[in-house]
Image (cartoon, rainbow, N blue to C red; front, side):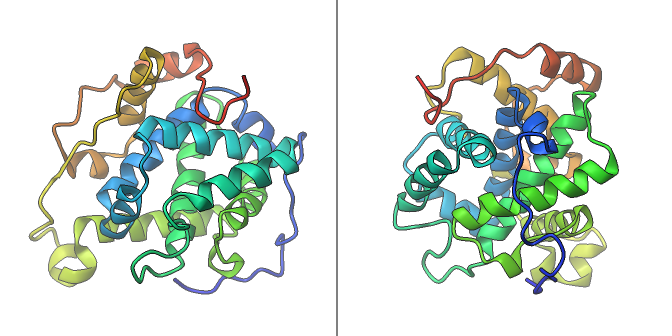
Length: 250
């Protein structure tokens, strides 16, 4: 991954008054993180790292949501939650079995992208300036998880570039070169991953996460469950009740 310019905004910190507070306030955050986790399952390296995590898919999303919320409101809690995440199976968020350390940055970019995507789908997408500010605010949470600051996206355009890299690698286009780019052979479809023994509200959230996936990601899954359409997704995101995850306060 290219080294990014960290001279502008690298010291930006989340503020309760910033866009992170509103984007992380409701259960659309968990839906976004479920969506990002599904895309990770399509990427060869990220899927291997995720497989080392003993938690169920919904538990990983719940823990990530708790960390992102705490990063903007309670730095001490955020540090504790990040330490737990990094302790899972030998700090898989940074290196595992020779993984390039920028895998943490790719995971981070997917989460930022999915949160912005969920907000737009729910009819509450931030203005362009606030979206850029959100990208900068979220760098701190990625560093807590062990990402290298120079690897992290510093703008919405860089987030999109990282997601495009994930798309290409998920479809096998990097290995296939021009043949893949022209729509040639692709990797075999990935079986849709089970959610685990999740509470019923999380089952609904997962269906919304499937609906939030872009078309290219849905096409790479086999056995994906039926997802609501665009209009139903907007209404469902607005009506979704708060979800309690593993990292939620009692």
